[in-house]
Image (cartoon, rainbow, N blue to C red; front, top):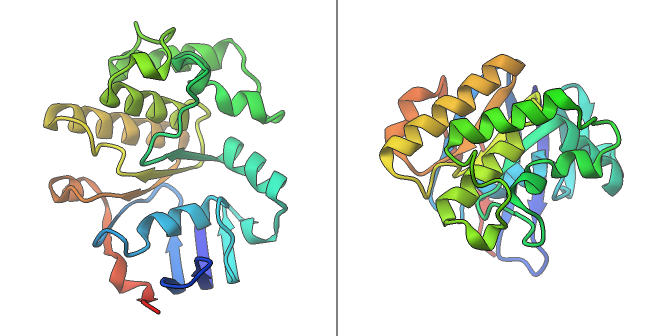
Length: 222
């Protein structure tokens, strides 16, 4: 599902550089990434999703080379093929929770917001405990509820790849287990792979493979 080769990246102004000689993720695999804050874990997810572009190297997702796409093509590819749970949720304040969940359909002509998609969204929202809050805007939701909206948005299109950046970070232990169950259940239903950044080591036994970021990247401070 993911093939990364000879990847290099640095932020403008220096201070951080990352090199990933090789990394791969099989279809349907569940992999957790651990490592200290600021080590580049989120940067790697953003590169895989095409939000950031590398200086050099190759990234393939589902057989498609993301690094060779234009900005618009990467955005459409991400919306239709990748479910991304952002650490800061990335909800749009002027949209209701329901409209935020449906946002991928709004920006991607390849997706059709049909009855099945609407039913799936309601089912996901009910499972996340926000089924009765879909008409509220983010400002009227708690942080945990906003996080659940972001999770529903990532899963509603049944993507082949789910990228999760601390998806359960603001939840209580019982909610963490329930959300992870939902994440894995939906991934299994869609045959999707899961690549998750987490600081919660209690969740690591739930994953098929755990990688310390230092095992497959090199970072240097300028």
